[in-house]
Length: 417
Image (tube, rainbow, N blue to C red; front, side, top):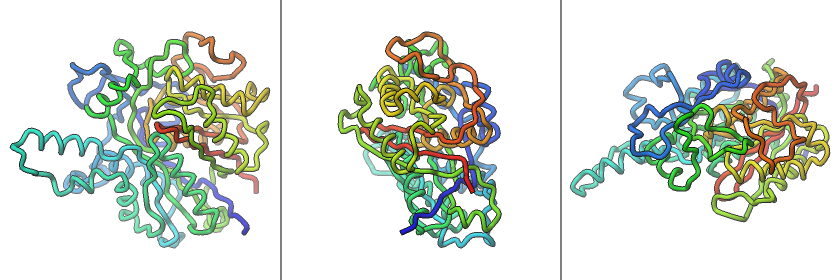
């Protein structure tokens, strides 16, 4: 069977550093930090008092207030980014068959705010089970792509992938496979997350996973820096329109790039910690290169998972050195989480978008907030520290890993006619 080629024809983003693709890209290249004191609730008794919140966003720009109340915030974010991506791709009733258009989305948690509010409301009562009739359909992780589908009349495959912080990368790989196998013409993919809540922050704090740099939130996410002390929680959404190449060409679509391949693996090691030698990360990058039929020496850029945790950053860079050998020092490596924080299930989507835009614009966004060299990290690696670097990127990879040892990687390449 001849596999079909898959290209990217639309992008949408709602992030802590920008509420559109243009704003997001400007934030990335200018090294903008999205971290600030939390505004959603009183943080007085919390260990971590800051996060990367989405700013100046109103769902009422997309739907009326009554309808909006029936959706959790993670679905609000999904609708905003998917609307932008669909418009960017120029999809309409005349140029697509809607039964050949799917929505495959990623969410690590789903409607956490809704769950928190409903359970807390119940706990304050007399034990009578009084719940909002929209409690379950607001909360469940699969509901975001359902709303995107209903909003646009897309009748192809529709579901959510859940693999913690690898969720939206897994969604992208599933979408890629559906299209290259000829099962769909177009798929809206990506992910959304809205976990900056009392429960979300409290839960991650109890695991000692979050930075507690309350005196300087904007510098707290510092991947690869020797003084890093945990990740910064972020929220938002990223949407990517994937399309079969001939279908895109026939309708005269703008094409950003081609997806070359995708890979997955499992650490099979620990509930939350990565394997110290990056065994699973080595496997996922090798699987991706093999799937793409790509020579490792052709890779120009890698956007790492790079969460700013003491163990994870070192293990990932060890894995890159193992897979790419001497060529590793020629790769522009970065972590855009230094600016956006960690969007959990949406991380893979917004970081893939960062890779696509870096390729389009010939600029690698920086890894900001680096001040102290970590002696456990190979000094020959180019971590794109503190300032964006110009680079002609023909091949790039995006790494995304999740609690439970879930690893996913997607390879993008410039389109060759």
